[in-house]
Image 1: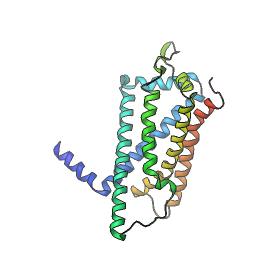
Image 2: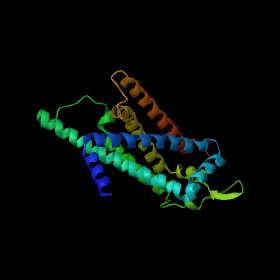
Image 3: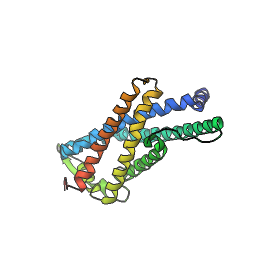
Image 4: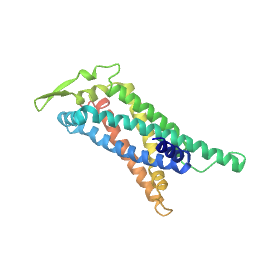
Length: 234
């Protein structure tokens, strides 16, 4: 165990180790974001569709599957942010040592606010879990409905009620805008770190990053907007 820990410590201490961790956790988070969005969009298919999806998540591995996913998500986000902050500090220190002073770099707004958008997204994940999972300050956990003759949690009603509250909608949309900014830069950076991107393919990966981020923004924001502004489900 000590040998494994020492090997990981040496791996993490190197810049390439941190970059690989950022890329791999980023890849895992990309997968989660797209899967989570697809699942949530089932609310537009109908009440039974979203409730069946929610029931499947809650009963997987006797209820342990969803918590494994939640804990894994938080661990991946924390590692992603900590490693990114460490790399950013190291890069700034290297530039200062090389040039004697900080010089402006040509960079996008998304890349300049990566750390802040990441921290905001982490705060949103914690809030989102408290709001819709732990049901802190609300009674969403008591919402029940019948599905195929079985009493299950009424996820449909929970989402409708949850996004009928203005502060939750505003925070959600702000978080999604920052997530879009984060994804648009992180997508191309991920392939660059993994050695897949070249000078010729980099513009393509940047365009794919913008398209992927835009898809996530529209898909995720469509739910609170439809509920709060257009009365969907109410």
